[in-house]
Length: 435
Ligand SMILES: NC(=O)c1ccc[n+]([C@@H]2O[C@H](COP(=O)([O-])OP(=O)(O)OC[C@H]3O[C@@H](n4cnc5c(N)ncnc54)[C@H](O)[C@@H]3O)[C@@H](O)[C@H]2O)c1
Ligand SMILES: O=c1ccn([C@@H]2O[C@H](COP(=O)(O)OP(=O)(O)O[C@H]3O[C@H](CO)[C@@H](O)[C@H](O)[C@H]3O)[C@@H](O)[C@H]2O)c(=O)[nH]1
Image (cartoon, protein in one colour):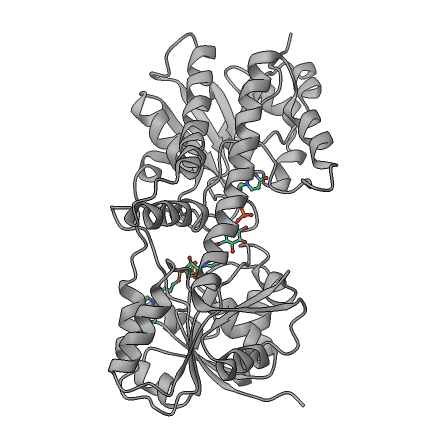
């Protein structure tokens, strides 16, 4: 029979809420603690402050085993396991900012009754050892420590949590490893146990390799553009090699989000701090920085060498479809660059939360793609929202001042767009010029 635990989850963000709701679904009693009053109040009143597919339903269905609080002491007092799911953003040096992790460790106080503290946040290798030492010093020697990195992708996080490719558990002692494995009873996917530093490294290595695959594809796309090959045809056939696979080889205006950018910087910084220059990762990051800039340059070339007083519509703000998250989205670089070149920027997105900060404070947002495109000099597909396939592109060509498109996700079919009169540019494919 499944052993039920009382889990305190610290952090009610994308990861903490999914973790808390999924553990409640698995039968554990969960309290989620956050420091943001407004966020906790929304949750206490039955709302969900972020969008994640299936999350609101999961929280509602498991409400009797899931509560929310601002009170750290209360959360720890009533629990036997603490899960740390706080944010670990980039500092100005590119290192991961661990201040929130330390805030949580500090709030543990004298919680000797705890069986384990588990860090799910993405952290540099060596963090666990430092936390362990701090816990020992605080008299928590008998409380276990584990690293249990998270591999869910936004938009499908609930599914990924419940049916993961693997559950990685890094622990220094078998009792703690066994406990964390027990918490996951009912979750599909293999449990892989290892030491704490290796578990921390798995997370950083996996994200770096995924980002590398995308940047590699984007490099191939640039060479395709220069030589007349078509990256979509190339990648399709390359991906049929079972040793390579088709995943994370979609060319585009670059990878963004809350993880790849900050985690690749953190891994590079971590290597640099030990005196090693991770040159390949630096190139992966640089290629990604160039992608949206190249798109702006290609638009500029097409618009007679200037973007001044041109109006450009950006379709998609979020870093990928299926999420409301705009953290480090390529759209932000595109909008900023276009504004800097003197263009007026309009935008559309079905899910992105309203943004009051730059560059979005200077961009007018429209309710539909067609409204956003009316009267513009060019349109850019930034996020591959599926509904963009169903836009009436014939009508769009008619309402735009010039039917010029940069498809930054290779979402549409070049010949068709050409036949509708568009000058259609995309990533790693030939430009088609409509009549
Ligand atoms: N977002 C993802 O898809 C994803 C996937 C895998 C791993 N991760 C990692 O998980 C961690 C969390 O990411 P996220 O996207 O959920 O971040 P987030 O910013 O959405 O959520 C973090 C939450 O922690 C809260 N918080 C900060 N300090 C706190 C404290 N002392 N006590 C309680 N709550 C506190 C914040 O208020 C915020 O609500 C990061 O390390 C991230 O790298 C994220
Ligand atoms: O072939 C591809 C695949 C993705 N992307 C872009 O890459 C970014 C990240 O996409 P995705 O991996 O789907 O989103 P995340 O939610 O950021 O998930 C990543 O980051 C998480 C946080 O660490 C990890 O847990 C996940 O395993 C990892 O996929 C987005 O901008 C995508 O548009 C591409 O350009 N081409």
